[in-house]
Image (cartoon, rainbow, N blue to C red; front, side):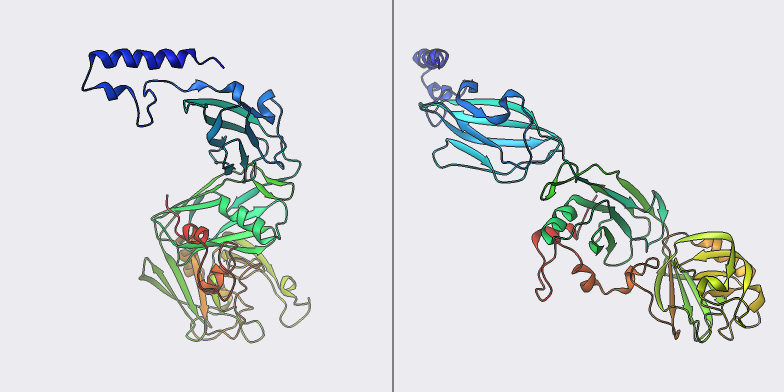
Length: 417
């Protein structure tokens, strides 16, 4: 290595000291080296596998070595194209830096290496290299579709491959970011190996803006399994619309942002067909639905059999529970429960309800003899699960019995935009 340029710099500082007495120290740092000296090119002092342009196997650690006789590595920073830093450790003698974190697959890294020579003079070198693409990619699709929803709308994340290991689930969950303005406390819940739901502790604030992003692309999830790209999602939350159907009083009370805007006589499920209790979320609206008893297990020719055109149908379960117009039962509405499980009302009231609510709004049934709404699988019953139990469905929260959450979980529970 040629040290002549650095010697000249030191000499020039010495000459300057002859003419500037009080400011002589301005040419040197606390270690005696010239502050104006630029780091020398340390290319001939550094060696690592990807220096020749080879794509590295992301399953193997990155190792950078000092090859100079009297030099050492002082610092290494490695960052991938997504801005993720690669953790690593430097040996005590400064001869070797080795990554301790996992390399991302199919991405480009920028590596900045700082060195010192035997005299302590600073050197440096910046490298770029690529990693080989993953053979298996785990991707995620967020739901619902972009748009405006009610305050009860959960966020869904559907994975293309199952993730069973808790540590791998934690990797996935850290990469799924939900941000809200205003900020909320919320958490993901693993419904099964391929599906997660996210909900706040309380309903979304009316007017909130919600963004959902995935940072899985290239990220190592598990053994030879890496994440793939995902499409971000943005939602707007509308007014807080809540409908309470009381099977005992046969009335539905509808509120907007806490104020009652309508009270409607209704009929709910009769004995043997009782409406499900609990909180349901509006799934969608259908102006016309043909409803048949066979769809809920009633055989044709039975005294309970029916085949009816139904209008202004607001769906709250996938199995066929609606809030809808039922002109054939107007005489029982507000008086008795005579339906096969749906909430029925007059055509005028059903039209008003249909026009007032949107997907994500809340419909709650109380005082029915029916079962509790399923948490998952038949719509969105997410809000029927107590918050502490919901939190334990996160891979980032400590095991049951330990009331404390990991630092990752605490950070995730308060996302901000």
